[in-house]
Structure formats: C-alpha cells, structure tokens
Length: 111
Length: 116
Image (cartoon, rainbow over all chains, first blue to last red; front, side, top):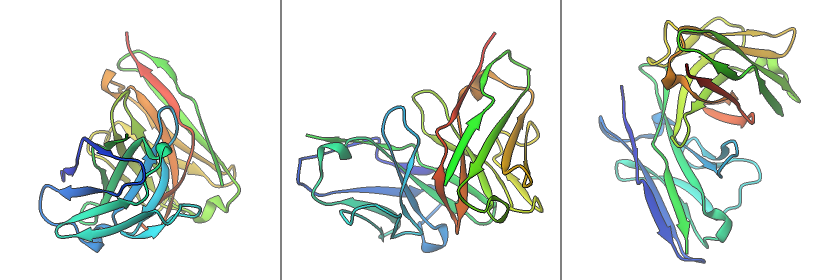
C-alpha cells in the first residue's frame, strides 16, 4: 500500500509563511492524485481546506494555497496567525486501488 | 450540509457494532459517501467508499472482510457494520460526503472503544 509522508511538525512565526509538503513513498505526487489538505484542531472534526491540488474549499481564506512543488504536494500558509496552530493532513487518491491514503499529519506551531 | 454519526460505544474484542450517519441539507441519494477513522492521538485513516446507488463499494485493506458499508437512501442514512472488532479498531469514526475526488463535509464523529 502507498505511504504518504508529511513533516511531523513545523514552526512558523506569526505573520510568517510556511510550506508543508506531502510526498508519496512510491514516487511523485501528481495532479492525478487529487491532493487534498485538511485542518484539524484538537477534539474537532477535520475541516477541508484545499482539494484537487489547489482549489480552496468554501470559506477558506486565500492565505491558504495548494500546489505541486517538485515531486510533492504542498500547502502554503502566508501571514500565519495564532489560530492556524493545529494539525494538517494531506490525502492522496490512489486510482489503481480506488483508495485514499492520508499522511501522518503535520503539527503546526505558531510562535 | 449536516452529517451526524451515531452508534459508537464500548465493545469487547471479537464483537460487532453498527454505526450510522444521518445526512441532511443535501440530496444524499446523489452523493458517494466515505467512512474515515482516527485512533486516539493518531492520524486519519480512510476506510470505505460507497457509491450513491450502492453499485460499488471500496475498502481499505485494514478493514476489508470485516467491515461493510451500506446506505438507505430513503432514510438519508449511511451505515458501517463492523464485525470481528479488534483493540486497534478503537477510534473516532467520521462520515464524509465525496465531491469530485475529495472529502467535502464531515460529521463530528462517534467514538468506538474495543476493549475487554
């Protein structure tokens, strides 16, 4: 089964910019994996931020953007705010299996 | 869109449980639906997808043969029948509607605890 990799943790200063990445053990991430990004605060359900590589979900501020950089999907947060401090999960669609695989998540600290 | 999971609780290893996900605010019968879980302190794990008309169902390897996804479009409800439960199935279970290739709206989850 495919393994999706994310940085376990990351720090950013308030107002700063951070890029979280999402890789695939078996090769490169492409648009065909329809990368998605989900935000989760403790005790809450995930919230959809970005889907299909770079499409922001309704109500998501444009400080959040998605892309593919090199062989990985990326989530960039500009102008980081204190309430951006939470967990971020990426997910890739594996078409040959008709399955979805989540990364282990990145715990973002804003300090 | 509102998704409300129920049916979670404590069960012994080897036992069974059926989760429900009540949908409202959208035309449930036209959407494929996912189940996703999250073990305590761990990440998200996709479990299953059922197409809008039950024509196809897909499962993660970790639950294939033990879990069965179904739906009743007349009741706007999604189900997850879980059999042969193991301690490692302890998790919060979420349902989500599928839009395109992604998870759109999520329920608040229901906790399943498998322990003797």
